[in-house]
Image 1 (cartoon, rainbow over the protein chains, first blue to last red):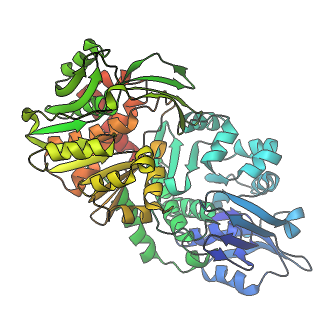
Image 2 (image 1 turned 60 degrees about the vertical axis):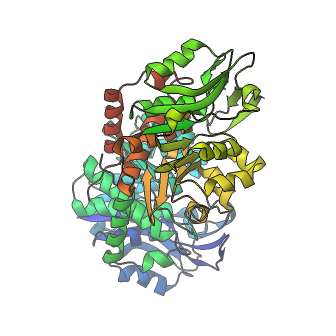
Image 3 (image 1 turned 45 degrees about the horizontal axis):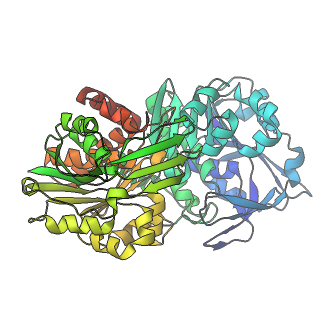
Amino acid sequence: MSLVIIGTIAYDAIETPFGKTDKIVGGAAMFAGIAASYLYDRVKLVSVVGEDFGDDNLNTMRSKGINLDGVQVKKGEKSFFWSGKYHNDMNSRDTLITELNVLADFDPIVPDSYQDCEYLLLGNLTPQVQLTTLDRLQRKPKLVVLDTMNFWMDIALDDLLRVLKRVDVLTINDAEARQLSGEYSLVKAAEKILQLGPRYLIIKKGEHGALLFGEDRIFAAPALPLAEVYDPTGAGDAFAGGFVGYLARVGTVNFNNMKNAVIFGSVLASFCVEKFGAERLRELDSSLINERIERFTELSKFDI
Amino acid sequence: MSLVIIGTIAYDAIETPFGKTDKIVGGAAMFAGIAASYLYDRVKLVSVVGEDFGDDNLNTMRSKGINLDGVQVKKGEKSFFWSGKYHNDMNSRDTLITELNVLADFDPIVPDSYQDCEYLLLGNLTPQVQLTTLDRLQRKPKLVVLDTMNFWMDIALDDLLRVLKRVDVLTINDAEARQLSGEYSLVKAAEKILQLGPRYLIIKKGEHGALLFGEDRIFAAPALPLAEVYDPTGAGDAFAGGFVGYLARVGTVNFNNMKNAVIFGSVLASFCVEKFGAERLRELDSSLINERIERFTELSKFDI
């Protein structure tokens, strides 16, 4: 049994109101993988990097117990590179540079050792690659979680709708839920999206928390109010990784576990934004995570 | 012992994407008073209306057990009138008409029978009138709650800062908290605002719920996800009325009761937006309110 995560491993260069970075390690699979590794010990990544990608960066992931057998290292090629600048509100950003490089013809390899996959996270990536990954798993996983973004709704909606039919959980943000459904009300948006395939929908609302829809129920998770958000990059991926990592650990999918998984996802995301890139995410341990779970409980608990 | 609420009683004409109304009954004191009346039975209003204000409208409030001895009816004058149009997102609106009428020279009367005031809600109104009301109470109330808006920050900031020094709780929305503090982060905004006088700050975030700050703690209340928001007018007033009404009922101010009060405020606000004006708010009873409290509990409860 394992948790397989497919997504990018990349270089990012980020500018926020708090500063800017040179090329640092980024990518959906990296953020999600590290987040999940704190909650579950059989995390396996499917991704691709270029020869320029430092071995030390891969070793950081290995040191978290993450299996990288499915990560191709392409000789003579360069890693995916993204550069972006966040606006003052930290909710919107401009993409400055996108160099696809190895991602341009990424053909995902799913090693035999990954065929024990029970939990699958299709991290934010071309829907076509997500479909190929699904096809290359001989057995349907117990739970398939899909994370995507508006970019794929704009340029690959048909493929995305095809993936949606085959997943159990979709995580997107509020603007994306509105775009995908054509409904402003998130309740109506959720109704429509749940007819496209997934049994559960998580709408991420950044500083406003997240909503979980499914089984005709709704759960509202708060976000931790933070004095500073240094860098939102990867927060959605860390959320997805924490979410599916928790479910893999408890091994049973029901609404109560899904609620807790949303809280774990929110906790990992709340750490992620405290420093640039994955710097904060890398330095966690279970006691820091449990302390923050306590803060989330304290934050939202009431007893009438 | 009583709960005194000062604010406008007015006529509104409202346009939203769901339709438009002729002149209907509105005003902060009306919304807050009706909301509070479901939770506490000694609610007393201070306000002013013109001769044009229908007796039946006043009787509707009286039928909820609300004391109107402090509501002046000005012969030969007209009631305050506001007309506004909400945009599609329901979060922003344009004011089309503001006729101050009786409000222009409103000199609040605090009847002797109101001097038993223990809980005071200074509803959204000119800060100078809020100050006069405070001055006319012979005994400092146990708890003073202030609701205000960006308009007063724009045109009467000095007076508003004077009121702030004398209140225990301030309720404003997130944009107003940012404006008042000059801080984008709501955590930092709260730190600054709590140095201006109030011991507690509630930041209302509309469809994203509300945050309560105080005693070095934070509580995050969800909003009820609604398929349709017909008319947001009065939701903030209903929130404030439900909030202070609950505190008046339990009679003890501490963080746990404040949290529950925020939930009651959110419940009353969630009803308010379901129909135009106070139409939905008027038709409630304790069983409907308790059912919705259950929904809020269900919505945000988790157990890790």
